[in-house]
Amino acid sequence: MLTFRPIQPQDDAAMAAIIRTVMPEFGADGPGFAIHDPEVDHMSRAYAAPDAAYFVVVDEAGRLVGGGGVAALEGGDPGVCELRKMYFLPGARGQGMGETLLRHCLAVAKELGYRTCYLETLTGMDQAIRLYQKVGFKPLCAPLGRTGHGGCDHWYARELA
Image (cartoon, rainbow, N blue to C red):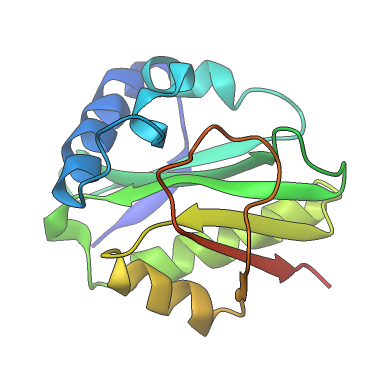
């Protein structure tokens, strides 16, 4: 059984390891990908702002197996947040937690006052793309904001009405 909770400082190293394990699996380890963002090593600090939230997914033994969160879109409109660093280890996929966590992140984003949620992904993350479309994300023709993630080639947004 998987559950999630807000990230804590003691989760930082494990979450960084998950990000650095999962992203190369999809070829997202070069320049222009989130694996190189400075926040990866200090996720609890990066999402401690009042306009951000990050959640870690834990298994029945209490081990971190994934996570995801929201924060203001860098260089974007004030009402737009970004779904950030939502990654799961292979053993945690396909159990429904991705959808559960995604819907929770969208609800939190709305509570934080955001009107739109944006995300970036890439070819090959097919399971994630299907999930995003299932929960109402619509494809965009070009990226929003200035995330620095030039390696991504799919962009989506969803209104938080």
